[in-house]
Image 1 (cartoon, rainbow, N blue to C red):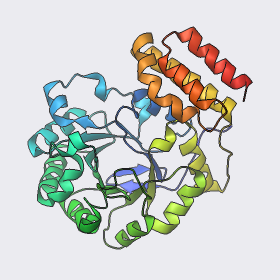
Image 2: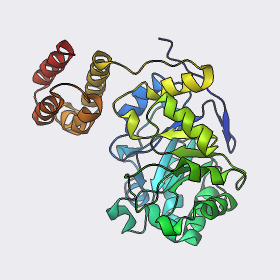
Image 3: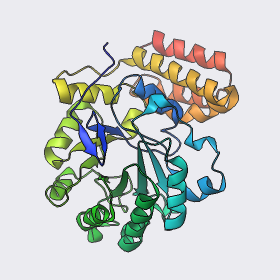
Length: 327
């Protein structure tokens, strides 16, 4: 398989991305390891880090949460918080590593919004604008924002919010096509996103329910977006973004990896986590990925239970072999 994909270009500020596909930030998921593995398939997609707390980063600027290397570029570092000065300071700390600084205004998790961060900023557009202005003034790389349709069905303000972010200096936005009230339930409303077309002059990425090359194409057609952002669907298929790029750019539909291929990806992913974090920590950290890799198979629940409770590396490999043999 040719693992170099090229899709249409998108200009974000003074940066040109040779793809219309990005990896969405996912806490505890889009770490250095996952980003490196996805980069082995796609040279061009925009990768995004896990959400980074601005307060924690300012307090500990040397923490390895901001770990990266030159192979990752183009990569956006996503920061979260609600204090413009701290957001600006954290962006400055990351500037020399980042292609782009992204601001989280869409996380719906209770502990985040209760701290006035994430999607709670959609209820305080002026504060959100102040944050973008402060971050923009502190760095020389483009600044982008990720948010939702709104706080609830009765308060969808994504169009006005996007316009305000553009006015503040954002070079692109990503919109998850659900409200905060929906969390991750229901269906992403790509039709709603189409209302953004012509309302802002900066690129916008559509996010939500994109799980295959076919859904990626459909989302772009319906939402009229300039690009798409892939989230949880990439957890159990390292090749997904590449396959999407290949389909959108060349019209070539590469089949989804079969179970044996997924087990090979799974083992490579686990081995990389162990080399990065150490054996015990790496194995424990990796438990969240098993359901994504091992899905829709016979005895799947039994295998997943065995894997998430097993700490012995060799026994884990034996389970992998058993799954492959029974595929």
